[in-house]
Amino acid sequence: MVWEGDRGASGGAEDDLPIFNAENLQSNVKSIYYSRTFLSIIGGVIAGIWGFTGFTGFIFYFLVMAAASFGLATQAKFSVCTYFDSWNRIFLDGIFGGLMSFVLFWTFAYDIVHIF
Amino acid sequence: MAEDLVLDTAIRDWVLVPLSVVMVLIGVLRYFVSKLMRSHQAPDLKVVKEGQVILRARNLRAASGFIPAKSFRSRKTYFTNEENGLLHVPKGQSQNAQAQMFSDPNLAMDMMKKNLSMIIPQTLTFAWVNFFFSGFVAAKIPFPLTQRFRGMLQNGIDLSTVDVSYVSSRSWYFLNLFGLRGLFSLILGEENAMDDTQRMMQMSGFGFDPSRSLSAEKDGIDIIQHDWALPKMEKRAEDALKKLLK
Image (tube, rainbow over all chains, first blue to last red; front, side, top):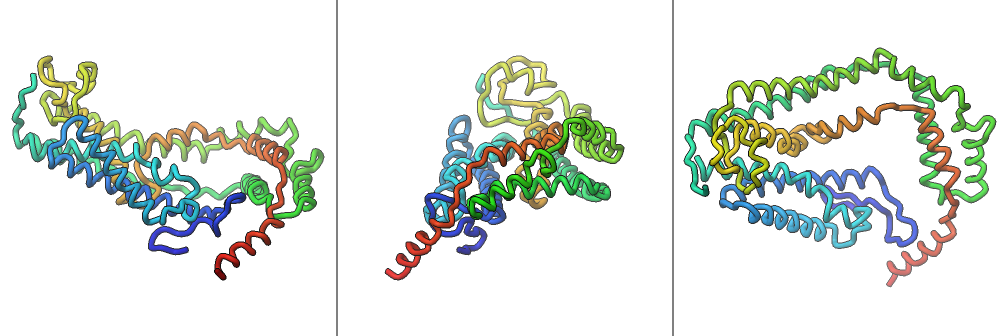
């Protein structure tokens, strides 16, 4: 199963013995990581420009991450075993790594637009 | 005090942006320098052999379901046999390898180079920031923090009534340090994000002690239960074909 960047990581639907092609799995996980990083940077700039402060900003970040997860799940056609080895990859992986980038760009944009 | 300070535009032009730009450039520079400085040492034959044995053992463990029980058992004895099994290391040899690994000059130089290339730019940049950019408010962070962070974030500012959200440039430096990791992984290609914490962990777990990993593999193989999956494959193929034909 080939779709753009994601590659099918396991052959066939299985319930007893999952077989994974390690290279494809890793490439899929990497593409998730990249998209999350990119989205957290963009989300940070947006949050700064709109002037979110305090908790609103963090909630915005988690909203963006949830939207990203939803988008990824849709692209993986909601069948996690064809592309990844567990649901956690799509939903939880890389969320806190992107948080620092989000905060940096949020601070940057907020300062440039609102304080200076 | 919740009033909004109005900060000079010059601070933005001459502090925030240059600091970020400098940190990005230093990261890129460090990436290329480490690429250039990577010394190629001829791999030691013994080490490579042991590494390959470990890989074979791992493959055996992972794919044990695909071979019949008898061949699995014969492979298992080949690896874990007490007399001449590949993974069995007699007790006397196990300590030497580690001592040898650490006193080997090439490896020590490599580790030192990696450590230095990481620590020196950070130290220099930090000193530069402290020298030039201290004593004024540099940025406002958009979320509120408690009073305890005041000492950490407002380092050069000696007024205690200023809101904790207004931080000095030192904290802007730290914010950049952590936040640019994601950016580096995007622009520099995959592995060479500035993940210093990961590298430190690799450094500490470095003692590539072959005998220990060999015995760990041996235990792993000993434990494993053989579950031959191939008989089920025919049933699965039948199911898949039936689905296709429907």
